[in-house]
Length: 264
Length: 321
Ligand SMILES: Nc1ncnc2c1ncn2[C@@H]1O[C@H](COP(=O)(O)OP(=O)(O)OP(=O)(O)O)[C@@H](O)[C@H]1O
Ligand SMILES: [Mg+2]
Image 1 (cartoon, rainbow over the protein chains, first blue to last red):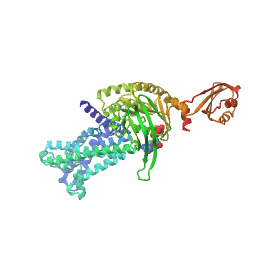
Image 2: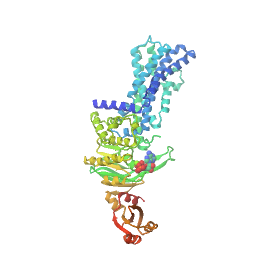
Image 3: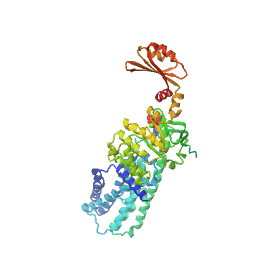
Image 4: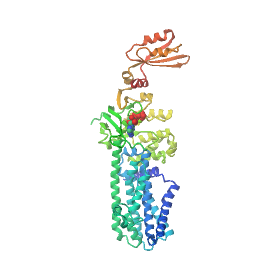
């Protein structure tokens, strides 16, 4: 068992270090800290300018949590895409490893970055935009950040398959972020979206976690939002399983077509 | 389950289809109807020109590619249906610039591979150090691979391919890019591995290397088997050539052309040898051209004449042209 865990962490660490090209000070600080904060400020100020000043809290919370899928999609989709670009995918495809373990290990070390990005954004929301923490249930905040990051991680692992198939990560990352931004209620409340977009929102990560988080800032306790937490977890787990299956399908397809050796 | 053979290919075939529009794609027959059997504990050479299907064969045998026809077994396990059992027992060295993480050090690349293949972390660490030492990368083990030269990358591929201590090893042009010392060290290492009971399937474009290392050779061309046997059998039976090496003390401008016109002569090559001239003539086996050659050159000009079997390279060229 310890051998299994050691190997799992070694793989998570090496695939993070080997494939995450933002892993240098400039890229890391600008992507994990600066960019999310700038987004929060821009959207909140735009909202205020548009006369929705009572929604300021809602914008800050929405955009701060939106930093989670953004940082995760960037990191995780890179790591899938470059696995193909670098020609190291065949190491996995010919290895003795369990494919599910391989697939999950790719997300592990990106998880803390998501928590970091969201917490920083909330902090600067308080510092610059008067985000009101007075009624907040702190246990609910902590649990919700953990759960939202988990479900977004699962979603990004799922999207990672498209980065392999397309040999490209920027497009699938933009699609993943776009879907979450539009349909999960980050800016526009989900009940005001045109019908089908609202329906999509129900099966997208962040939606339920975010609505629970907004409630928590209004004073709802952990117990009050437990339904949303469970829902968010179920959404995450569904993507985790669907993504793992897709990963196996891709492998079978790679061996059938023989084209995955090529990176361009 | 037949365990007399480490590797068995039965009518193995592979067609690549490219282009995504159905009906409009191109088809490449990379391998067709390849049947070979590789006994346990030998070095088996897979030779053939560029695009012959050698890498394709190795990718099929290492479970990276499914055949489009026929079947293959490694240590008795089907490479498609029992891929898992096959993977537990094989190692491969595909070489090249790709397939490594440039942002990790040499040692980290090898340790990642160990973890990926579920080796015991302690064993993996020890073997990684041993193998890096063995391939001459000990002092560069902690350098990032993006700073490696081509030959250093090739050495790393070799160390990694051997990490799991596999029973069957596929080596695709393992000495490519290695300096003469590195190539020699590997050529000494291969018999050692076979001595431990391992079976090695090797491709190479260096005929001397193949001749030196291989117990058996399959020559393939455009996906088809054209010759199979020990190096000596390939030289004698398949090439059907006799080579005359003649040292002459005097030559004429037209001599090479005249010699080429003799019945049965396939190829003439002249080179300087000290103050003399050396002429190498490839003659079809069974044709007695000795007298005609002597007459054409002129007996008084001949310092020395020997007939010998072709080298593997000469045999290769004659079989494939
Ligand atoms: N992914 C692919 N898609 C389409 N055709 C391919 C692919 N890989 C190989 N081929 C074709 O299959 C044939 C055999 O290629 P292969 O790589 O097996 O040759 P090889 O014997 O290893 O050659 P070399 O000595 O140059 O390494 C070639 O015609 C090649 O163009
Ligand atoms: Mg090749």
